[in-house]
Length: 428
Image 1: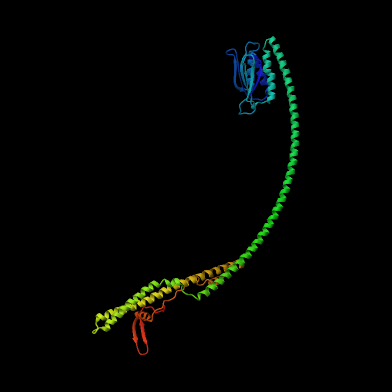
Image 2: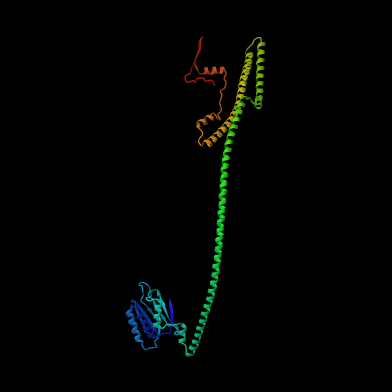
């Protein structure tokens, strides 16, 4: 919104000025005029009409009020033709205010037909717009008008002096700004030169560091390769040395097995049980001997003499046979454990030697170790060899007769026919 000042207008003056403004607008379109006066019933309300009809109506209203200066215009609103349809039309609103200074307000200037500066010039030609101070001074009495004029002159001188001071201050500030700008440019140039020198120095230093780093990395890579080669040689020699040492220990272990004997601790374990068996044998032998003496000394031997003798002999023989079997079984069990420990030790050494051999083979040949050699070298590893128990010929004969269906004895041979489904005898 733009606002302008002018002296209060009469109703006729306002109508003439509005008609002149409408005449200056060449753009056709609809206008709307509303004008009120200080006389009740005397007003103009055209509504929205074409421009020519509105211009005719306001001219007729001005003709009616021609020569009557007592009728004042209290307000009027003039809706002007708009440049683009569909938008709000520009409106010129007159307000008498307090009767000393009136205002003209222009609303919605975006749709004006004329340019803003051309429209302001047309307003000045039609309504004689001015500043608020000039309008106020024109309405004052002559003596106050002179005082206002003098005050205006003083204000004008003050404005000129203020403008000169502002210009001098602007020149001073501009000179200072130019000096500051010059100093700043010089400092920037020095800083930029110094920065370029530092960047060049940093780049040279980085190139030197990169060269040193590359040389050190090359030396480190060379040292690493030499170390890996030495380590590979050491590993190969270590593998060979370990394998040879294991082979030597296996040979020593095999040589020591040829002279196997039970330990003293193993032999002492059965002394307690052996003493009990000896006491039992002595008791049964004494019983059999005493019974035999009674049998021989009796004048009429009978069952009371034969039964104790038979019991003593049978007890002695059974105890003796059990003692022999127990001693043999005990010896076999402990011997088996000792032989198994010796074989386990040898198998561990042999397996370690075989593992070292496979590792060396795969590292040197870069292929898998032959399965045939691996199976041959690892045959019977950690496997216990079971031995059969010795049997008495009588036990073998009894076992054979237990499976026989019939037995034929002749002068030349003995024929034994086994029962159907009986297994053939295999010596254990």
